[in-house]
Image (cartoon, rainbow, N blue to C red; front, side, top):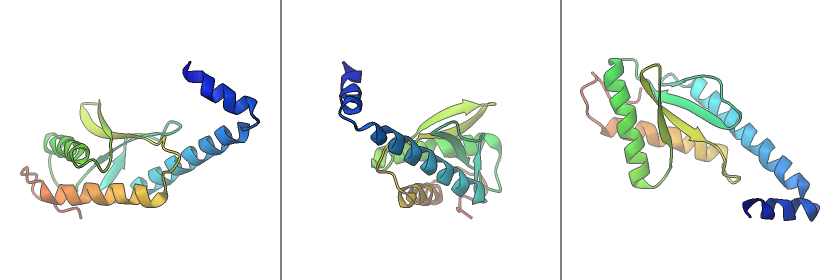
Length: 135
């Protein structure tokens, strides 16, 4: 039954709708990946797979365990504020944040705001990693 809506749209001649949605999703994913690559305080786990990015806040100072804890706390606070919803994954023993860009209304400004919000939360978290300033 979930596919019935999609089928009805396709049958009504709206097949360009899905193509536009996918193009936009991939464009925003590439944009977000480029933002992360350009930042000196974030790292990408790997090149994005269609619309999913795994990344982490990575200050210049601090040990991996404290940085893992920092990313976990940032994720929890992001969810608690209700501004953004992201999940976390563990890869190679490290904690990463994971965003799936599926919202057709996402904009570059929203993605920039997400990184800004993460930096703001990092500045508020005190976990003893030497410095928690975003730069």
